[in-house]
Each structure stands twice: as C-alpha cells, then as structure tokens.
Image (cartoon, rainbow, N blue to C red):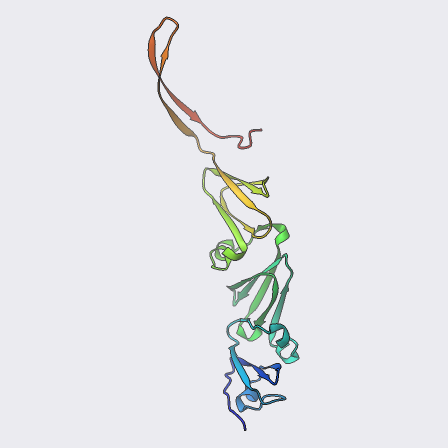
Length: 218
C-alpha cells in the first residue's frame, strides 16, 4: 500500500523506516510515494528556500551522497566563526560545529573568521553588529566624540580605542573597557573660608580648567 505525499520543487524530505534514516531531494520520486529503497514510516518535509538546514540527526543524513550534492557544508572549529550571506544579504552568524545550507536557497557566500584575531573588522560592520545573532558572538563598544576608551583583556591593558564602533569576538577572555573624557572640563570649587596668621578671614572660590592628555599616567 502506497501513500502519496506531494513534495514541492522547493522542498525536500527526510524519511525514516525500520531504524534507517535517509533523504530524498528528488520531488519526482517523493511525490509519487516511491521513496528509494523502502516504504517510509515517517516523512519530514523541509523548505529548501530557507537556507539553513537543521536536523537532530544531521550528521547521519549527510552520509547520503545525494543529499551532500544539494548542500553547502560548513565545518567550524572551536576557534572559528562564519557569516553567511544569501543573495548579498546577511543571513546567519554561525558558531563552532557543522552547519548545512541548501544550495537551492539562493546565491550563498560564506566568510570564515578566527577568534584568535580577537578584534572583528568588516566593511559591513554596522549591518552585522545590529542583528540579533550578533549578541551571541560579538561584544562592541561605541566611542563617542571627545572620548578615548582603554581596552582590557583579562585585566591587562591591550589597546586604546578612538572614536567609532569597535567590535570583538566573545569567548576570547574577560574583556572590559573604561571611557576617558578627553574634552576640556571646568571644575568649580565652592567657597572655602581661610584664616591668615593675622586672624583675617576671607573666602576663596576656585575655578579649575583641566584636560586629560595622558590617560595612563605616564
């Protein structure tokens, strides 16, 4: 007995039967119900227009040569991250692990990065840092005009940041920063009563203008 399941040209199916897991990316075969090799007990239909393919048994499915031909596989080591662009638009930020992307979803481009470089620089930094996924992988500090920021990693001063947006990979140590106001500042000291040796009393008001020029005290 056959059960007809309609698989669109923009979809694929994951099929399981008698403890065996396989994939069918051919709509003609799946649509007729004639699944290769066995009568499937359970069929999961996935949308291949959604670039990222996620499955609890992804490593098993990737053993299927036919499915491998349909996917772009991105394997990332513990110190690697990747940015996926789909049709020149930001699609995903990926962490360590194995990831699969449907080639049929669009024009895909993957950029790989090493977190050992610590600082993340990119021509489209503003776009990348504004995404929801960015908070999982990136830390950032915006340095305003008239400020300078001292950057520390694991308690050690490693740099001074000028005006602009600066972004760093998470998981590379304990990162902290301290902003220093470089603008000229005026401090008004309230009146202080002073008595002279001749017992004359007078009030002293003090206005101090200062500017930080050496933020490290050297």
